[in-house]
Amino acid sequence: MSGGTKLIIVALIVTGLYAWFGNSIPQSAWEAPQKKVLTPDMKPAELAEAGRDIFKRAGCGVCHSVRGETLRGPDLSRIGAERDAEIMAAILYNGTDVMPAANKAPAYLNDAEITAVVAYMQSLGGRPKVKIGDIKSGGLE
Ligand code: HEC
Image (cartoon, rainbow, N blue to C red):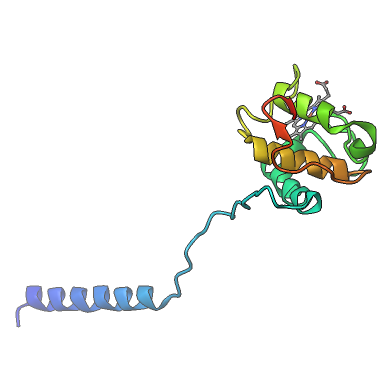
């Protein structure tokens, strides 16, 4: 066998070993965090629970604490006792000079997701009451 042939055989064996080793490592598929499906039959308390995740995902927590701290925006730990759903929905759809509207960039929440966030905020210092369908672009039905 010539030196060149030997080298090719060694190279093939090494490649084969790497392939075998690579395949022996258990593969775990990466999955995006599951978006919870929001349906009209969900109880306000279930919506509030989903709303807590949406609140996190939408980045509300960058500016709002729910445990008494003042960040860029006001603390929301008692917002459910302080504001009704109509006011919450209005601020979420309209935003302010500082706060981006929740249905626009960067959060792009839809009506159902905004309703869930409102239910979550109602639960902070109060009781969740809204259901899917209660809040549609811009206000309470
Ligand atoms: C860039 C910072 C920022 C982000 C992000 C933000 N907010 Fe705000 N938010 C504010 C500020 C600041 C105010 C107070 C009004 C003002 O000065 O513009 C406010 C006001 C509010 C109010 C009214 C509070 C009150 O006492 O009446 C609610 C409710 C609220 N935000 C909810 C949310 C939710 C829910 C999200 C996520 C979808 C969010 N905010 C994202 C900054 C932010």
